[in-house]
Structures are given as C-alpha cells and as structure tokens.
Length: 584
Image (cartoon, rainbow, N blue to C red):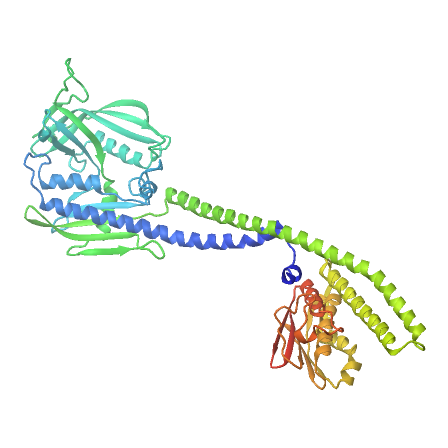
C-alpha cells in the first residue's frame, strides 16, 4: 500500500502534450509503411504483368500446336493466333476488384496497358528473317453467323496494314485515341461489308458508330454509358482491293414478322490491338534473331519493369519466333490515387489507436493526479495541525524538566527527556514532509549555470564538524558546469551528502565525484542494505528503522528536487559501499 501511495510519479502532463508526443510513432511508422508500400507496389505490379505475359505466351504456344479447325471457324492457325494475340495482349495489374475477389463494387481498372500511353504490351510472331508475320497492331474483328447452327459461324478480320483506306484508318485512329479518354468510347454495328470467307477477311462498307459518354468509363459499377449519337460511316473501297471479296448485307438485330432472327448476322464488331508505332518501336528496339528466354530492363530503382521474351514456335511445320515486350508504367493516376488512399488510411488508423491509448492514459492520469492532490493536501493539513499540539507538548515537557531538574527522581527525568526527544523527532519529520511537498509542487524554476563541484563543497561544509569527530575521510573530485535551478539542486545534493554522513561508519570514507553527466556520492557503511524502495518517502534501511535521527525522507526529497530539474537519482549498494548519483 505504501508503494502505491508514495512512489515517485513522473512529471505531470496534459492530454494534448501526451498526444503530440505520442504522434511521433504514427508519423514514423507511416513513413516506414509508405516506403515499403512504394516498392511493394512496383514489385507486385511488374510481377503481375509478367505473369500475364507468360500466360498469354503459353496460350499462344498451345494454340499453335492444337490448330485443328474442322468447321473453318477461325480460318486456320495463323488467323486463330492473330485473333488471340490482338485480343489477349495487355496487362492489368493491381486491379483492386481482383484483390477483393469482385465482391465489392470497386473500379474495374488497375495499372493497365490498355489506357496508359506510357505502358506497353506487344506480341508478335517473327519469321526467320526477322519480319513481322502477326502482331497486335489494331485490327477490326467480327463474327458472321449464317444460320442458327453455331458451327457455321466465321471469324473475320480487317487489318489496316493490309488495306490503305483513309476512312478506315481514321476509324482506327479515333478508336485508339478513345482508349486514353476517361469519358469517350465507341461501339460499332457493321451493316454491310466486303467479305472474303476463304481467307476470313472483311472490309467494312457501312458501319453504325455509336458515340458513348462516361462520367468515368473505368468504373463500370457506378457509371453507365450515355449514348451521344450514332453516325453512319460509309467506307469507299477501291476496286483494286475487292478482287476476291463480295458485298454482304447484315441483318444486325432485325427480325422477321414471325419473330425469327434474320441472317446473315454480324456480331462482336470491335477494334482490338494497339498503335502500329508502339509495336514497331518494341520490335526495332528489342527483337533479336536467335535470342531465347527472358531479358529485362528497368526504369525503377529496385524492380525490373520491362520484360522481353523470345520463344521458338512451330506453325504449320514452319519455325517462327514468338516475341513479346511488356513495359509497365507503375505510377499511373490510378496507382498514385490508391497509394495515397492506403497511406492515409494507415496513418489515420495509427492516429486513432494513438488517440485511444492517450485518452485512456489521460483518464488514469487524472484519477492519479486527483488522488495525489488529495494525499498531498491531507498530509500537509495533518502536518500543519500536528505542529501546534507538538509545540505545546514540547513546551510543557521542557517546563516540567526545568521545574523538576533539582527535585525530580531519575526515572521521572528520563521520561521527560524521552518526551522531548520524540517531540523533536516528530517535529523534524513534519518539517521534512512539508519540504518534500513543497519541492514536488515547485512549478517555476530559475535555471542558470551551476558549478556542481562548488555546490557539493558548500553542502559538505555544513557537516565538517561531524565528519572530523567521526574521522570520516571526505574527498570531492572532478567538476563541471550544468544548467539547473540552484536552489532545488542544492536541496538534492545536500540531502545526498547528509544521508552519506549519517550512515557512513566511523573511520570510513565518502567520495564525491562531479562531471557533466553525474554527481556521484559513494560512502562506506557497516552492512549492505536493500535499496529497492529507499527513494520513496518514509522508507528506511532495515538497521535504521528504529533510528530516531532518520525520517526516511532525505533520499525522497533529493529525488524530487532532482526531478524538478529533469534529472534522476539512482542508488545501489554493493560490498558495503552505498552509491547515490544524480544523472544530469
């Protein structure tokens, strides 16, 4: 119980000061988290893109082997690979919805090559001379269905690299530009086209182009397209391109009077692939004949963000090279936004936890401060109230002693002397109790440069007579100047020296050493003492419990006075040498 009541408490503080100090930890941990997340974002995005690249390459290699097309649906292996390469060459890393398994309505975008000009996703099949046979340059694809039988569907494509028609080239350009727009997109409905069913080629003749507007076209859950009009585009085709083509009209979504669908129908009309300039740049920069495996380049500090592959592929008995080049631009607007969101959420979470911890500690502190104030007020009031009756008792005892000194018997005089001795001891204890309370309540300090050795010498001088009478060897060594309040520091030093003088054995020694970090007082004692609780008020060593010259307050006053200056008193006892030190 005594430990709880009188154990020295840290300097009082307010909630705001405590919270401001505690906020160092959220700031530091948030900085660490932001650095870790920064490099983790780059690594995860690049690893995901490379994984998607490897998956597409594996699929292409498998498709080249499994090339059977019984119903001539795709038009042979090359056409099948052309469609797969154009539709599948892209990466979409850090897709937030994927992280949550699409269970929440989050944006369906990520760090993607499909809407970022700085990213790159290129796949090409090269012949032995290094010429491009197939690549993911932008092409228009569609599926023609001649009746209700699924096996009669035909995949057709139109490659702007094979036909130089300005209207079609413009259509491709506008579509590619719309990929990088947050708001604009197009959909297509081919109502007539020139088709070459043998080669699975087509040249669109009349296309209904719908202009779609999105508030945010990368957020499909919240933003539906607003149709801003339909334009009929007629593509005039030079007869030189039409040697093996025939004009075919498509029913689109039309039905006859009985509700039966009309044929032939054209569906899946869209443009897939990337700019020819991007493909050409990747091929010219990184394709190498007879190269195999992965090579890497990097725009970042710790992560390879460009993955280049060369793989052998056999198509219809001929050997080709499957070339791919994926360059990831990690820090898109999307990734910057979510990086900022995660760092902010992490900081707010730590701040909230810090707030709760400080709030809880502040509630406990307030209760503790209230109890300490009550305890101090009770002690002070009790001490003040005891002083008057003690003075009266001492005065009566002194008068009786004076009156009976000549006629009183020895036993009577002994009792009166004991009364006066105990009154003096109690009065001294009350004075020191009030001194301790006064020391703990000092709020304003006058800090100056203090010569710590001089302070020790002045304090020791008060006990010079006792030291000489008991043949104690006193030495004061070292010296330093520190910044402190001289009065409170003097109280601390004087109480340590007083304690040393009181308990040093006769003929023993006291060594006082001063430097910039410590003032250390070491003295010889008769027996080792337990120092565990000696800094608490009213705690004495075992041999001093019956000592009426000791109040058990000297070390407590020294500790409180040192604490007022921001210093700390430490004590220990070993090999019959007691050490008390003020740490500056």
